[in-house]
Image 1 (tube, rainbow, N blue to C red):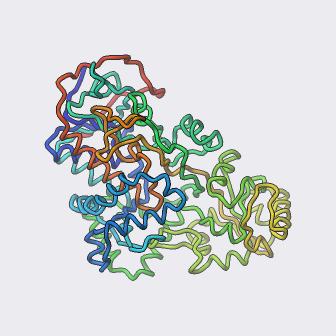
Image 2: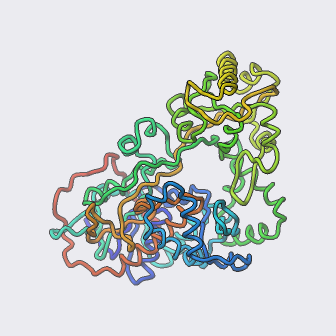
Image 3: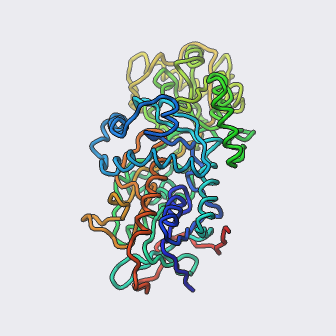
Length: 523
């Protein structure tokens, strides 16, 4: 059995849904194959910030911005990684982010902003309201409106090619789906693909779990199987987060209906900034881990045995150290540091430009993660840490800090170290990879290319799958790229010449390991 459409999109997250809508509004019929029971992908799990220049939100706020200023700020944010940047794709992002955000607004997505996001000179970060589910709700509604068919529980295990080597479709659950004009890969990143992480980053990184467990690198495997090349697979966003609290995040509980989004925006724009920040602190403390500036000021991270697990100078090393142990880590600090991080300009954690949480906020909103005691022994008992181990570790660290050297892990920033009590612990925290920054090589039309730079006929990639060497080293750029690249890929795919030969040839064995399920259709 086979099904034929004009544009076949593999992946129903933000970039895939945007690609399907773009294809449909360009005059093509589109089908989306999503392997999960529900669409949304990482877009629906994200904070939801969208960074863009030249938006109506900026105009209303009196922000005079430009594409060139946006690009220059991205260069600054890249730092040493600027040498790795795909400048052509960066310009595509910068030039299209503003109009894409306006398009999202036109289909019912509401934003709060723009807010500052250092080191950017201009406020460009637009925060979705009431939560990132608003993207998924609006995109699905628009996709249905445009006649896009979204099929769930449909994991693709093979791309199909004709005798000329053109990509003409895909196989999922034993069925063949053909795209007369093109196939778009939009399957997210590889943050949950242990084999890819081990091969390109290392075994220690492979042990760190992903926030989105379904990001198993399917598009990377499918694309490379037909000649595509993976770029910059060595960079993962690794860090520590708090597990979900006893009570759900109130922001995520809000329904993402357009009417609710508009109401939330009206309220948010009229509330005094200080009051809005207070309301957001409950959400902020629900999962965001402490800033690494607390370690630089003297805090340490220990496991359940009270032992340090890694160099606290590096979020990456901390995440790997915690994952290699019990995946439980506790930040320990003293009274002096607690006072320092109880008021501006020293927040414990942030929603940049929107809300800041301090030590007292964790005591208020996350009492299950907040521990305080007069002695280290009492602190250990409250937090569930081995007392003798913690006592010995703190004593050793005091000696290291006094000498300014760390023979255990090579830490260089000791701050004031750990002094007198009372003592504090935040945790347990768990290590996670929020996203991975590799991607298939693509050109500026989002066509997948070979190592030699040749276009693979009939194949496009968007979002994280088609990141193509982009750095995206500041908040709000990944969502921006997902939507921008999806729209561009969908438009070009719809405009591609229809192929007459839709007969698949070549090996039909599966290149993916996970068994596929029966499919269902979202109507």
